[in-house]
Length: 378
Ligand SMILES: Cc1ncc(COP(=O)(O)O)c(C=O)c1O
Image (cartoon, rainbow, N blue to C red):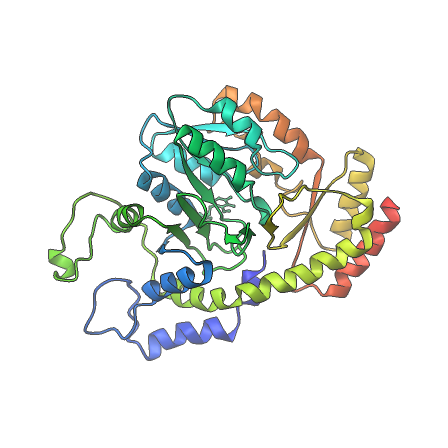
């Protein structure tokens, strides 16, 4: 995921300007007489424009965005939230942190939530579904929204791994009731740490805005010290430093995706015809940051992984870090029932190989890799 690969003078100059020309105001709120800009607020507007989102709130991380998102759609202690077995622990942590119960659905060959599983897992306590658009590919939002509507359940899209991707021409993260992105250092764009929350609902936005800032309403008629409040919250604010970096990175998002795409198809053109690929739901626009296929034969799989390591491509989280990304291994956080059920997903993931697309590598590097893979699979 290449955001960090192309941090350059643009981000450096933006931070420098903040210190040299804007009095070094690093806080997103107040200091009205000293500051010249409100960078976090601008960053949010830029996101709205880019994703065609009605409201965006910038926060401290993707994990906090999921937690705030869940609270803002009314998930409470004791409620159940369905999410998927191929994931990152952060999604489960956010559910647990508000006292709700994670219920794990298996994935299908798209490596995202299997819509057929969701209906079986819905109970009277189910309040929300979190589809996770893993490694650049959209979950089947059409089917998920249909089920959510039928059972009157909210949908929170965890879009930490597919920012810039689309489903039926709509940007991921803006399709469900609420959507979140991560801007941590491993993501398609980054500001070190950070996250965003997107929604069409003013009510959800207002709750999230107040909650992430200790309940502050940022009432324009009041000073920060005399500000009005309705709820208590927490501190999940983003800083101006993160925002100036994020604004520069957001401008690079389309370029990153188009460069990813060139590398992705450099592989696919040569070797794609021999491979059993991850299924892509109809109507998807990918971010092409990972090339994923299945290899069921253990010896062949070993051969491919050795090749990827020898040529210094690595295999990202499949199978490299499968234990961090598959709920079958999370008995420190999940019930036995969830662990046992996740075995189906573990078995799918165990046959998957992910080639990370990196911008520091040239198109020809990917062509050479594909030719080596062709020798194995032809
Ligand atoms: C699917 C998924 N959800 C949530 C997160 C959490 O994001 P952050 O690291 O910004 O807290 C990540 C980050 O790795 C992720 O991949």
